[in-house]
Image 1 (spheres, one colour):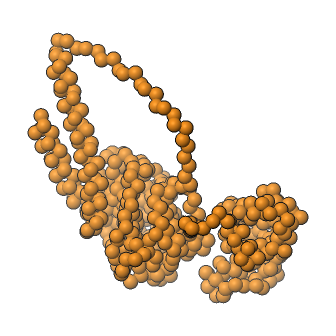
Image 2 (cartoon, rainbow, N blue to C red):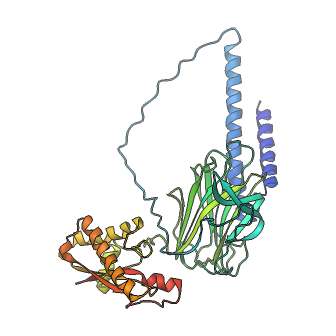
Image 3 (tube, rainbow, N blue to C red):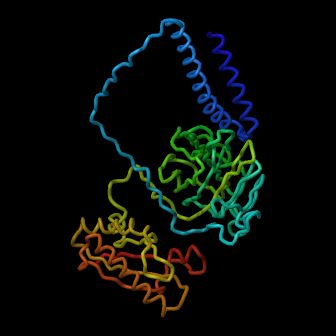
Length: 431
């Protein structure tokens, strides 16, 4: 029996490695091959051994009981686990999109069957498709590899603070072949597959495991990936439904989220990414679908490990006498606050309620697009909207005064999108 069990395990190992080669999963060399093979083979062997052991146990039980003497075995009484009285908590849903969108593709105006116009092809094939009547990108022919066309194809648009988001769908319910996915980030001088860091996962199995390879700040060059972390079986994303993926990079911190839950949290990686790609490798012709890609400047707030509990508002007031933010957003041409602005306004409200004698002049600033006749009253209305929101959070309105500054006090040139985004701001001036 032992010899048969060993033979079964060895056969399964050979089959897995052969199948992985057929899928093109071993696209990388060095550490990545080792990581993928170890993860996949370990999982496969565990299942094979478990199944074989169960078969051995059943055979031994049958032999002991005999065909003519079947015994009913009473199940053991469950033993209640002792409650240790321990509670835990972890902040894992802290993703926030960067404040300046530099690339967005909602597939508007695209023609089904054509290559998506806002993308470039690295390898393989991709085309515009529809899922339940909604347009998306289909990565097809077993090797779809694409990258955004940003500002004419430049490869240095990311910088040291950015977020990237997209939705992805793949249906592996038939269990007859699933792709591997890679989300790769390269320095502007490097070609695809020579990444500073990468997130990769396989759509196989009931739950997906996510790996992250990354360069440490002390690594030389731009292609070695010495760091590695694994989030094992943390999500099910191969169920034929759309799932949301989001990544934040802030100076040194990589954070990756699936459906709002943070699953990768690397505190110390090398900066310098300029561009990124999305790759899907299949062993059959079933597409992987992608939609709603958004790239933005700005990132999830950096966790300073040696910082005190002083809030960003309190620190800014202590150092400069004012708190300036570009994270209070309004609908275009209106004074209507966007929902995502409330997190920033809550910070100010918390500070003011903890310091009830502080008075703020709330200044609204716009960029120079449009005339003063439009921007001046608009900035006043926006400042008043912020004051009203603070009052709704319990702040005493007596300590607030709304002032519209229009476009008269820029902090950056109004000749670029980035400069105009910096000028669209709200300032809280301590009085």
